Length: 123
Length: 472
Image (cartoon, rainbow over all chains, first blue to last red; front, side):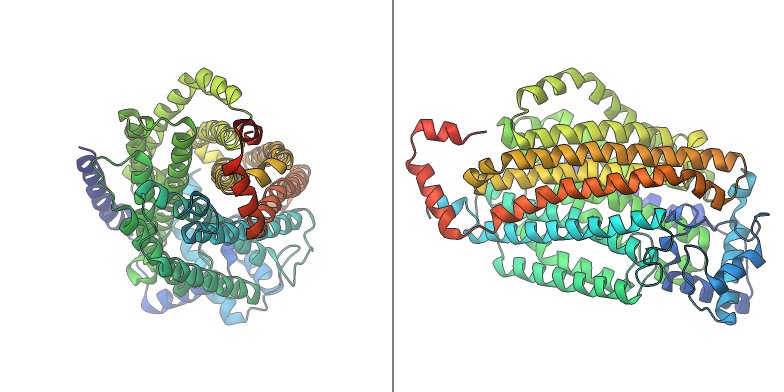
């Protein structure tokens, strides 16, 4: 009986995972190839510099720095504010000496995250 | 084989457990050290900003503390396996292969963090290839676990189910957390974040299974009651835990714009934890009475303390699983309080219960000599942890009000400073408390073999009076 209960739950878990991977997280946002490349470059830079250590995206990450999900559309921050921090660092943030191309890529990535943040903006 | 060799660190099975135990405690000690540095960076923004910034101290702390949890669980399992299966570990060289792979991988990961080489994903902040190496290092452990135990799941006690589940889901969830390497996941941020929360939520559940299984095994050994770990009630709570491991992760994603039914499923599953909550309250009187009766047994005391932390953290978990509250608590230090309460209050206390149980079995005399300091260590850790946990909750509440009032991040951080100071300083006290436990474990475990032998032989020839005297 215990083995059967386990197998039922496990099968449910696999099926649920597949549904979450597909229907549960479908996106209607379509980017052009060049744009997609730029976002991808920004995302990899975000990971390469371990930005998640201090910043959150949708709650994932550290708390020493501000949450960045809506950093671009936030009236108190915005794109120029984000660019300034990326170029110079801050009180707690080291200066990573990003090039202009890298700053552009990171901003593109953050813009793409911001575009999806419907639930955040609603609240 | 003499009784002494069978139950001492001189026996090869126990020597493997000892080496993993010491490795695990080294992870904990260094992990706590980087945690302190990270805590100080909250109150002194310029502290090590350019040489060892929070970008490095946090992954070092997170990696080492997580690795402490599963390595200490593995050390316990290596120690308990031969006693449960009544045979030696199946593949002795496999233990050393496991040790070598894990130690080398850890050194690469730590060196990588120092030099700024990151994979940049939450929890798994090292480059992806090293995540693969972690799984590879587990392979000899898995072979040894199943080949030594040869479990019959129809009759196996619940802790064997829990350990097996923990191992299975560790492989599944670590693999799942690297799905982002495929374009299908990487190019859709909502999918990427949802799957990341899903994998990490279940991964925590997987090592909880390893740790809680150890706790139940210890309880069985202390009470001498083998029926409890085979009872219907035990299996009911195991399956409840398994359901939560598989589906509860979704309460982290209320704010992620995935399909609404993902959140509904998560909420419904989260609320099944109320059954466990209700059971704890129903059993409260009995638990308190048992804890008082067995307070003098250090292992039992640690298990009882873990019970208190389970109650506190379950209260918090259920509260933050309610969408109306989650909306505010999400992204605040209340989530960190939950993580710290779970990893230190529950997991570390249960694992320390396992450590003290093994130490007492191996070196009863030395254990008795150091009992006072072990008690002090436990006391300091838990009082400091309560202050630490409360200060995180308080800084979370400050942030909630800051967000409601539309205050800037900088202003909220300024207002939270008193609580940050409290958590940084109480964190140092947690380090001191656990440091005492770690130092004593090293002291006992690294004693000269001859001394162990003499003491152990004295036990064998001792009369009842001396044996009673050696009991706690």
